[in-house]
Length: 58
Image 1 (cartoon, rainbow, N blue to C red):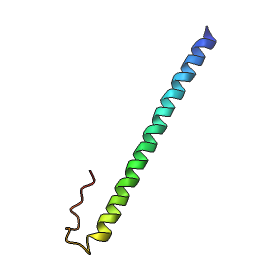
Image 2 (image 1 turned 120 degrees about the vertical axis):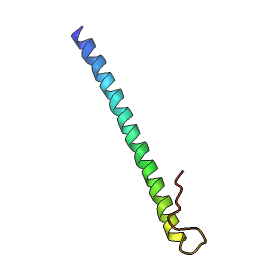
Image 3 (image 1 turned 135 degrees about the vertical axis):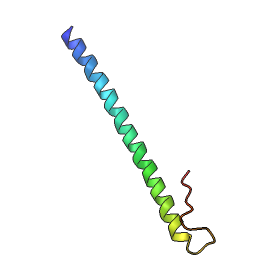
Image 4 (image 1 turned 180 degrees about the vertical axis):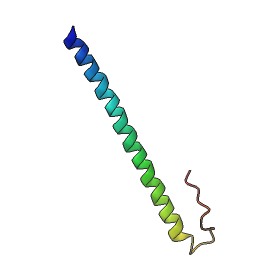
């Protein structure tokens, strides 16, 4: 009985840690996309009619 409970708790812990890793990777990916958009905006706004700082990252 103790071994079954221990295995069950181990599986729950593994699933929880996988969810955390997935969330971290997703958050990092979105941060990279946002950074690329920001760099692109500020490197091109000087040469275009777009107002620098009028940044929409949606």
